[in-house]
Length: 339
Length: 282
Image (cartoon, rainbow over all chains, first blue to last red; front, side, top):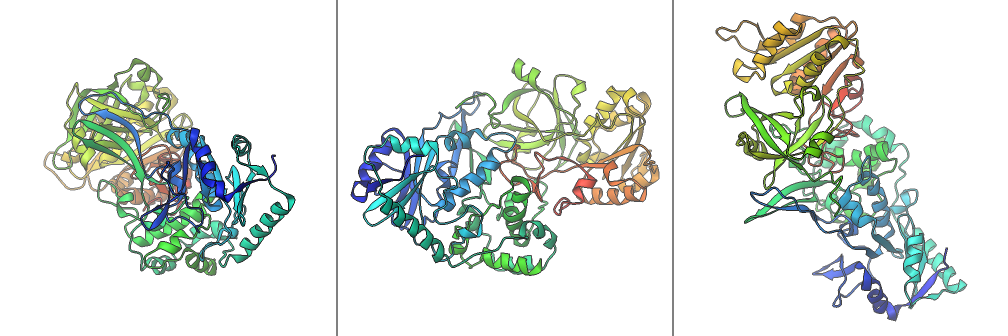
């Protein structure tokens, strides 16, 4: 593998211009008060000094709303969308990249989802190591997880004083870096500084969960009063799932304007009642108790059962943004007590 | 984007024939449809128990069980209860109209593994639709199976699907048929009472038998209890589940019961499997 490379921070914009010359570039940018991963254009102000974006960058491969096909009302021809372009996601946090690797397993299970993989296979992920983890991060609770984890990444990027260090992880990443002409080989000292900052960042994490026994034990707590307790204040707003980088559930709807119709899919949430509501009016998950129970079981037991990995990366978003302070680590701690 | 093998892209099919099974607010209409594209028609393979997403462009899709056996011919049959937006729109279709179909989805009843056995279907209401292909399949391969027993009931005569067909089976095809309605009606020659009671009235022997049940959750629950009373083992009992579905290919998430996706791991499950699944009968 190619050695670590460095980029002078002052040349960042030129570097980004180089990347987006031939590829669709997603990077964090200010949108109103918050940062979001969105396509970079000439006018974009890419922001790399942040903890993490509120909305995860999963939209780069799994858009919040996506057209499956279009048609004309009254006609039967179905028009599929154009193939997607090669893309680079720059500044993705290691937890969010790991999340993509996790949902790859679902989207490739038995048969590939063509819309997802049309983007995913064309995406190179340039991760940005976390040097200042946020207060509710718990990525080191997972095997492969950590503020400088390379799982799922093609390149790991780390900010140092006035440079960025870029370390290729995959061949795709190496290829991508070799195409850029603003990079120089980093010195041994610079690489050592970066390694040190990675280790220090891991030490800064304040929260952790020992997941041992949870996947096997969770389904056994099906009738435990704990589910009523932990879901009691839930508003059913769904933010824990919308902002979750491993949540992948979607709805499919037809949208019609005049004679133009399209069938599209959009992020959906298992925390909504309608999600499982049968046409008959029967709902297998009638209250927030059952929905919360399903959410936790899905991430920590069902997904493990099917795909051999916990569908949680410890990004902390569901804790940070829950309007009523429901805390997944708190729920898991109660689960552990009952095991 | 490539056209081939796009699992979300439906095929166009023409309604060849359609008729009402039941009337009223929640009427049930059966559609016999044929794919417009010759190639699609020839490549389509399904087995009893599988489902398809049927729908209309501009309205949406619903997962409906395929209610015919592949042995019946190069067409598909769906019996659809009018419940929501999509099924309402489907009910407006008449012969010659178009609908969209994609699939087939899910696993199937292991009809080939059941060869040499006695087959008992126990259905309630619209739950007879996924059982019908088993009956047709066994009829077509009659020598491969032992006795075929059809137990079927609905709330009233007005709610019974396929009544004439089932009554006809008794006479022509050496099938033992048992029908019921919940409450007495004038002129009704068959059993009066709930399906689980009819099952006890028929009291099939579990010896070398497979029992398959489908119907409302409450009926399934009591049928299971009664099958246990009749000494059926868990792996002699099968059912087919339904849940809200959108994709049909195990991606959209919503049809899970525990770690099983009904659209891929099901809809057909043995009771031996379902007993381990916490949400199976929710």
